Image 1 (cartoon, protein in one colour):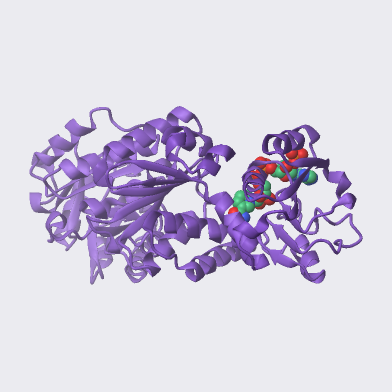
Image 2 (cartoon, helix red, strand yellow):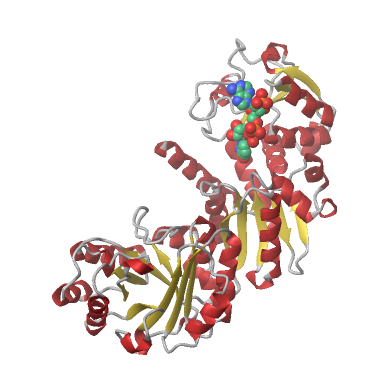
Length: 517
Ligand code: NAP
């Protein structure tokens, strides 16, 4: 058997939970074809405890390494029979060719169903990250078993960082998994720390533990097979975060640029203290090699406060939101707002002008939410003559006054007199795709030369179609989304971003979103 601590190879282990041996065997071959390096045969999931011949048939000619597990109900598994039967099933499996056997730490070595060199000694805590995690790890590491395995429920991504502490400290090949969505990073980055393996499901719905990604997600989205001890780490902090497109776009960009880097989702609870505690824990672990973070709702204001105004782009400070943190090798932080940068770059590219050429142009921003705020601040900074239109008068007036713009109600758009119109409302967003903020106008007035709709779902909104029909430059939310990610990539890496690759990823994702809805 290979020693992953020496070779650095971290197995993708597909946990198989079929209820019949025939189906489990079929899944084993499917897992191997999908890119798994090993399978965990969860024999406790089989409806009928397997007889010797059934185990032999299951294991015969296995295409990848095999780990057998028969977890009792007391340890969160499904096996209800006597302990002697359970251990006999495991012993049979090893005699019939299984490479590894998972043995719970509660089983005394005298009863281990295999020689110590085949034993993965495991401990599970389905409620929390054990407060005595380091002691548990030391006990497992001091045992005769070949491999240590610890799995615990993660309440927050700080718990996943604890998993890496253990991986770094154990002397034997080790698996440490923080379960649940908050622990996902522990399943992705194990390879950076020489983990024995990481578990994956064959498909969604076939997970054997909460938060398990699929094999394809690990190989194609996170590229875990190319992780090295030197891999740089990037991520997106938000709440919620599961539907963020950022991991797909940035991981594809790193791959296209040939960079040894991985971008992970980080689900951090909404409070400022949650944000601060995670950042402190992350930055204290300099060996994480974290070089950059995207920050999304609801943490953009917290990010500004954490990084400190003196270390942030002045317009980001004016907007009051940082969506990009850059971490220098010496640990110092810088904050930027690529939401405004992405929007302005999209606008000027669509109009074939430079940012400075915006000075003196009349513009209308529809909406007064977070996106409008970033765009209003930037347009005023570049010298536009700006009017904010909003449904809720108080909110719109407040935003306009803060940045020195004019204000009008959204129902006064017939008075529109601007060269540039930017929609920052959600009018026209899926599923209300037949709506447009300019629908009440008979036609777009001739003074309007450029229309920018920040909505990206759908990309071709009714407003964008109206703009094209009127011969205006039409700038989409897709342009803005890609440009803000491009700006992040370039800020972090000081290299030109593979823009086309990034655009294709977002366009593909958006296509997939619409199909699913
Ligand atoms: P937000 O803070 O919730 O603000 C929403 C704005 O839309 C408010 O001004 C609100 O007006 C207005 N609004 C909503 N429904 C309306 C309706 N039925 N009629 C009139 N006005 C309405 O949202 P946000 O984060 O700023 O996002 C705004 C838009 O930006 C969304 O469409 C989103 O898709 C888009 N966006 C694009 C990107 C990108 O990268 N392309 C990124 C993020 C967001 P009131 O003040 O009257 O409520």
